[in-house]
Every structure is written in C-alpha cells, then in structure tokens.
Length: 234
Image 1 (spheres, one colour):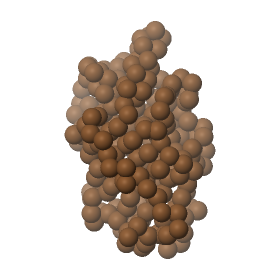
Image 2 (cartoon, rainbow, N blue to C red):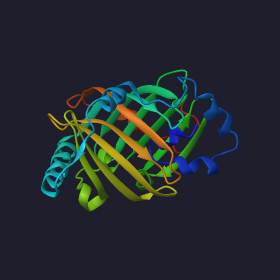
Image 3 (spheres, rainbow, N blue to C red):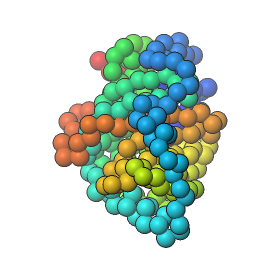
Image 4 (cartoon, rainbow, N blue to C red):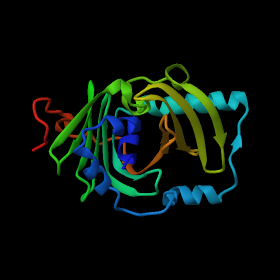
C-alpha cells in the first residue's frame, strides 16, 4: 500500500495516516503481483550494463537534465507506477509550473494526488478523505520548480550512461520522514524524461514510467485546485 505515497516521497507518512485510511490503501494493491520491474524497465535491464561516466561528461548530463526540466512549463501524459511489492497502477499526470501537478489514478483506484503550488493533497474518493502535506516535503522538485539546478537543489550521487538511457541519481534531504533518493532516467537521444525511481528513507522503492507525454498541451487549471474546507472531492 505504501507505493502510492512513495510517488511523492511520502512513504513515511503511512504510519501517521488516519487509521481509517489503512484498509483503503491495502485495497489499492490490485494490479499485479510479485517483485518485478515495469515492462519498460525490463527492456532496459536486458541491455548492456550502463557505464559510469567521466566527471566532465557527468556535468554535461546534469546540464542537459536541467535544460530539459527548465524548458518544460506544462506536461500531460500517462504513467505506470510500480511499488516495492511489484503491484502496478496507472493513470494520467498533469503538470503546470510552478508547483502544480495532478496524478489521476485509473479506476478502480480511488486516489488523486494534487499539488496547488503550496500544498499536496492525497484524496481518497471512496473514503472521502483528504490528507495534506507541505509541497516542500515531496522530492519531485524536478517537476515542480520553475527553475531547477539539480546540483544546487539536490545532491548528485551518480551518473551512468548506457546505449539508450542516461541515469542521474540524486539525494534530497528535505523530504517527509528524512532523506529520499531519486533515480532520474532520460532517453540518451533527446534527454527527455523516461521514468524515475523514488527510494524513501525506509528503503521502499516506487518506479514511475511515463508515456504519451505532451509538452505543448496546457492542462485545465481546475485540475490543481484543493478544497481546504472539505475532506472529500465531490
């Protein structure tokens, strides 16, 4: 159940969540089983092992990553999320910089994750609950900040490059519950973001793979509204 929180680096929040929330989170683990990577990852893993790049090449990779993120003002696409237990869910992702995003999970999942630039709301339609967090507690700065410098805003741990993908591993100490580590995976050809893996302070991993990404379509501003006076989203 933890992997829905991990998409935002909030895995540690499970223990502090409302008791009524527990059964609903458990019911969401329905789309798969076994500890296995997402299909896109399986193809990557079969390729030649990536090689750690030289310092100057690593710096160039970070600059390309910064250029990609800073060139994105809006993003609309699909995602597939795989938790530490191998369970999968999917849905649509909408981003409007600065600070706004929405993960809309496909049914039967009742979940929505919404950031309005100030807070992040985890909504459960079935239980009519809404849990709020400070936006600074999430490790998704690369999607949320108007201007990102990975070397300044996070700690670069490693850069590796294979035939198809380049991976930049970063560390963020400002996330909920402690330090989170994030692996950002880019297509080496155009340095577009392919997927990311968040490892929370307890070591639980969640992989989010993107597809059908459109960087020109402007999302509906209403997608990013949080109703602070209600606990449901009707």
